Length: 549
Image (cartoon, rainbow, N blue to C red; front, side, top):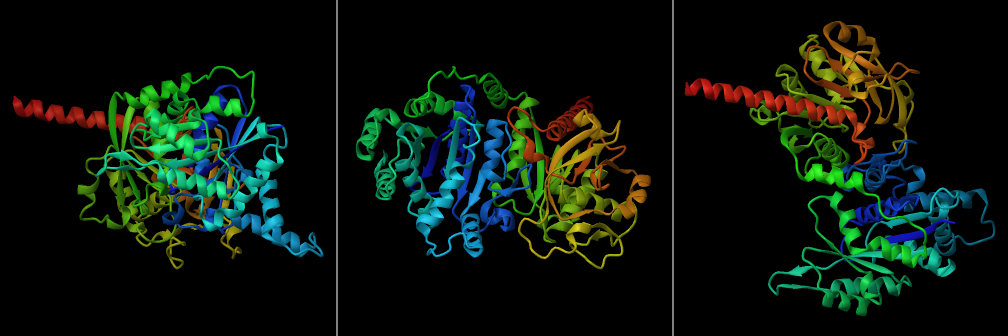
């Protein structure tokens, strides 16, 4: 039977519960245990699919088509195993299930209440992943902060599980903050004490307290926290700010978090941690031999989490290339014909990011044109690929009014059109083309060189597609549809012949990039950017030498 670890948070949000949960999972996995992580979010939305990125960061998509919280991306990147629909549960989904059961008569004669009906459904979901014998440990991250009204049913469910389960099968890790007051030059433990007290008032007693801090915790301070929060001193874990999230597992290893957990859960027979690949990754990440500058053209750049998976994929691809990837965020709304040269001239590569709606579209098209005309390595994802198609139609094929029907339903050249199966859909939530689909790649194409295969599978999240009515026009002019869905003929990949590196993909490759398996498109894109940067440096050196002579 699986054992369960619950990760809660206090004092403030955004402390990094997902990173701590993923780091702990990585350490336990490295000792030979089978581990998975799930996220319980307290908001009423059934899933984050209808949320604006400004609200909740990016929407992460799994192979089975679940639109989930971005923390599932951390779980996959750290553990190198896929998650699923079962790994992300929201309050909305819990209530929806209970209300459907009530309508079907399952609770006939009963008054449906938060306790026991809502908490019973939460507990059922919490235990679900551990019931098939596939995992030794299931880690559950509770979203929100202790004290939030919307989190109370989740906390109550954990309290009941702590009471119902054997002591060695269930434990709680509480993440909190130790703020530093500059005026007093002191670390303050009182917020942590209040946070633990608040959790204890709800009947949940943490076994381990992980303390986010900007400064090292002294043994005296740890003893103080342990005394007033009713845990052993060795169960107070220091989590100092790290240069990268990928250093956190190593910091938790030094603190002995995994050993404390193994002892509490009475797990024996585990092996020493095998983290050679992780250490090798960190070594390359921290000691790059070159540097490239990539422009990320998007319209949600004010919030870094809106493009979280893309940024992490660049870290993975940069490390394997022993190259520091400096990502420069450029707002597409503020790109025009007059300033595009100034904004993009120092870049070694250009990525046009995914998105929805008409805002900032013209700036993306102008950026694509610049990359195409200046042989700048280009990579378009989802909407970015669609913008490449529209730019080519307008400026190479001469169809000045070419557009996507998402932006202009009356365009005479709808080179991007709504998918046939999407035309009758009225509801927004969970109705896009979602999850993993196969793609057949043309032999000898750039995509074939990148993947070293003609058959791949990638994750999708879109409603509009390349309009195959125009496919011959594009092919004859040099924009090749090099990847297609074998069942429907949907164009998945386009690439420009005669360009050093110009590729657009309808899917989201960033969602499958992990530390141990960087995504090949990102890896080759960074390689192309390195070549571009080297060529620029050589040209500049040649000019200087000529000028000197």
